[in-house]
Amino acid sequence: MYKGRLTSQAGVTFIEALLQLLLFIVFCQLVGLIFLAVYDVSRMKEQRMEVDWEVAIADINYYLMDARVQLSSDQKTVFLSYPKEQQISRISFVNHALIYRKNAGVETIVAGMQDAKFSLEGQDLKLEAVLESSEKRQRVFIVEQVLE
Image 1 (cartoon, rainbow, N blue to C red):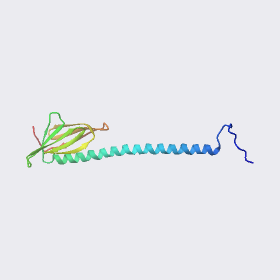
Image 2: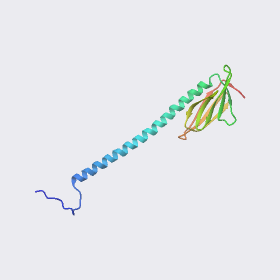
Image 3: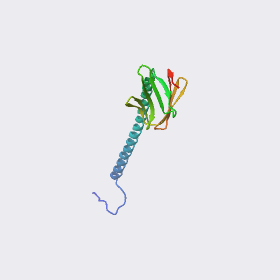
Image 4: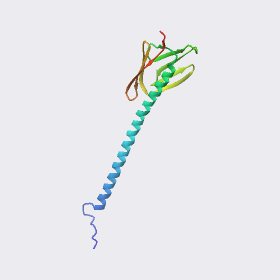
């Protein structure tokens, strides 16, 4: 009744072909899941940088309230003096980050930047930044008083 397969016979059985097809499908699904995971991580990183940028803008707006502004010659630092507090603080671009220095304390406003430059035109303080993803961003802040 049952006829055994000879070892010298070439070819595959239907079950072997189904098993190979099943393994191929599983492999394709794993590759697809890995691709989706990498895509999601990169998208989350972009969204995180967007949120960090907007929080940094809000922080800079807060630091600029009631401040007298003076720009450094290299356009990487903005000096802020507050008439009520008799102290000078500054916002600087150092080591791929915007930082806020007040007295002996240092606070990172936003990290992950390739470059940042400030410019002052009248009462408009302009921040031009290049993010790690090479995306260029700029924002204009209105300042009340400008020191020469």
